[in-house]
Image (cartoon, rainbow, N blue to C red; front, side, top):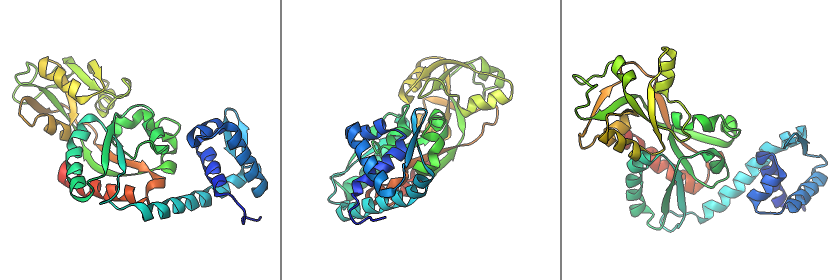
Length: 314
């Protein structure tokens, strides 16, 4: 096998088809025509002396040879990306824009501290936050966003998606902190007595529920289900700010993490009490594309976030 005249762009095509499982999707991601991607695959088949992919249902499945090739090819492409980006990334000079996907409350807690660092060390770098919605892992895989900062309950549906089921293949993460839930209500709420809420009153209350997809259950619901109980989820909203306004102006209550409860009650206008049962801890994680692990810009931003995690969240 002679690689002297191998076009490295063919390896990019191979890698993209492997990840996407489709020539159509690969062509869209690479911004090439389907015929150009097909021609590139045929050239690589000739060079590798193997079909590399075969159609099974609606996906292109890798051959045994392609499975042998994919690891070294990914490492080679990552090394090239890292080498080129290392030459060009200098925080004080970079004009890169980092794109985060986080819930609005997490953005409010983290953004100010990150911006302080950017102003000191990297004044030309920009930071954008987008909503944490369906398909966010796919967007991260496609490098449309740089980081996801989210609690496990927010990611339930994403982890059940096709790309989510291959999480360890595409992504890396670290736990920012562990948390549990608290009950938040307006001051003087009739169901809270002596800074406590009973199980009977908790179940009788109208609950506001924050859900990205409007469907997924939180650890609170899962714990109640194990006990054979169910709360009345009266209102489902996408954003914390909307949920907090409903709680502020009505007799609805909400279950929030300890960190978020502390943040929304910084003016002491709510009652924050323990749940009337023990709920499981959950993790809040920073997630990034595994192919960006050695990227100097991505690594630099992760170091900032890692340095802030104890200061901001604990």
